[in-house]
Length: 212
Image 1 (cartoon, rainbow, N blue to C red):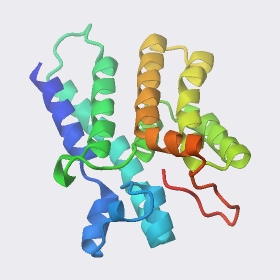
Image 2 (cartoon, rainbow, N blue to C red; image 1 turned 90 degrees about the vertical axis):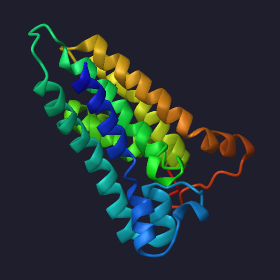
Image 3 (tube, helix red, strand yellow; image 1 turned 180 degrees about the vertical axis):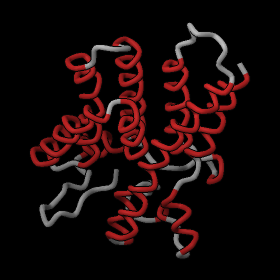
């Protein structure tokens, strides 16, 4: 259906609006040339300060949330079948936003790792599941002191929390959260490699965190 294809395309294009790279163009830097080389909130924070890092995090989180609202309105505009399960198609759009963030059309397909955008998506779908996943992130950060590992574990916990607490659209949401977790794992493969080599930056609790 046309509306579904349009929502996936629009979601990808919204995801491609990488705020760390836009902010860098405004301020004459490319965050990919510094630190971890990642065009995301934490590398921006570490290389260019708290204000820039916070702006990037909030924008990336918001665009995940906003893209799903827009996708829903696009899909509903062409919805004529009462048996149509819109949620499944929203999950396709959600993955498209994250892929756009990681591989942005506007920036040579070199973007971020999708964590903040994924957070915004889950704030739309199941906001009450965000809190326990953030707790996993914080505990993992305290124990292991690797931001990348904490992020991987937080997203890996989402299917578990869906399994424990979600009662509606259970299979669809578990499947989506599992695929999203795999995508986040893939985008953090460099972090995993650095941890195995012993070269991954550890958080020092002054709180300066590693790139995500």
